[in-house]
Image 1: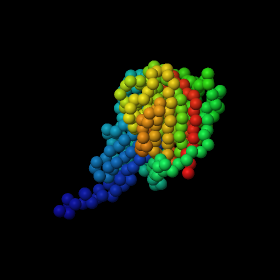
Image 2: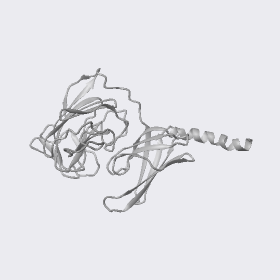
Image 3: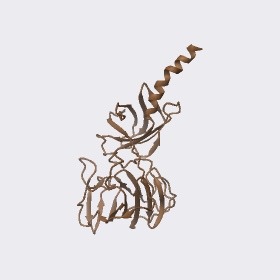
Image 4: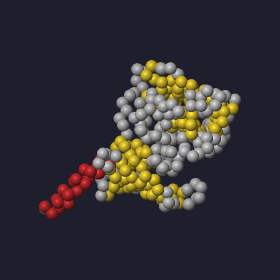
Length: 312
């Protein structure tokens, strides 16, 4: 009987250590070519029912991790995909260990030779809610309709690719993402935008949570639709206008609570954001962040960008 019990007793400290991986992690990737942060959620570590979700695989979705293990104190998971440029299959291995101060320290190694080091910290608790107690501060016009003052490129060593014409800013396809010089915490945001046929873009709130822009008039809504919080929440209805028409967002963000009104129709109502989306350029969720205008997909134009801080 004692011989049967000893292996189980020996494993108890190991499982207890494994449980420290559980939780949500905001991940900084200093050498990521598109200046993106990642997000990881681990559950069931230490119980034999290990699961994971990840934002950071190519494509930018919030993905369920299919292969995930913890062995000898190391968290490991993998991802396989076909590179859209070369058409070749690529295999990625992710591994991470916990540091004595409670951080994740890891590396991604890909079969095509790419290697990225990353550091994760536990996502902070943000308790503020959009509960009716917030009042409007002084509005800030983020775009002066003459030039790109107040904005800079998010992606290092990439040409801006934006110009201002007829009081609107517009990009060329594949341009840099724009990031506001100023950072903000709780706010309401009014943005007018226009996209062409088959184009898409996005608006990054605090530089971390993307409200999708997509030319999808008449299509059923999903988590990638115009009005979606990208790969997190689908809009309740498709409120899009046809390609080439000006549209408007009115967005509220308090803590992690987001409300999205598209073309005067509420499509997301006070939903709680679980964590970063693929647009994230800064992993520090507990701090104010900028507004991002996505330019690295198809052509898009913006005008009348007004942010009103929400204060108590």
